[in-house]
Amino acid sequence: MPNRPDDMTPEFLAQCEQAFDQSAEVPPYAKRGPVRTQMLEIFTASTWLLGNLIDIGCPEALAQQICFSHGQLCLGRDPWDVADNLLGNYHKGFYPLPGQGLTDAEQNQTEAPLGKAPPVRKPE
Image (tube, rainbow, N blue to C red; front, side, top):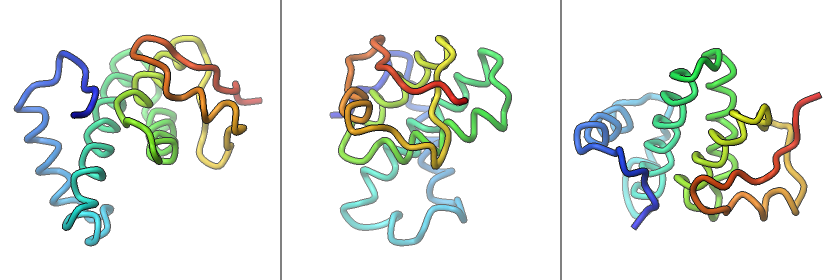
């Protein structure tokens, strides 16, 4: 069971699933078979992260870049923990951008519990 936030509603989950199924950006292989569940969870967590970043005043273009990084950082990790960590780091002024990459030590620290944001390099 994913480590979803407490404020997750069935309506939000249904909207995300519908958007996932209708998205032209999601490759067809990700919409079927065993990979679907994991990809849908990453998509849903990224959608939640995007909404929360915009709600706290993050410029939409930057929020989209952070969400792209979210997808990259989710490999082998709980997407909700990664999303929560990225949101916490944004509050502190730290966020990874696509292609910026993280050191192995930083990647290993992205599995902090909810509310505990790991260190992520500040863009230069």
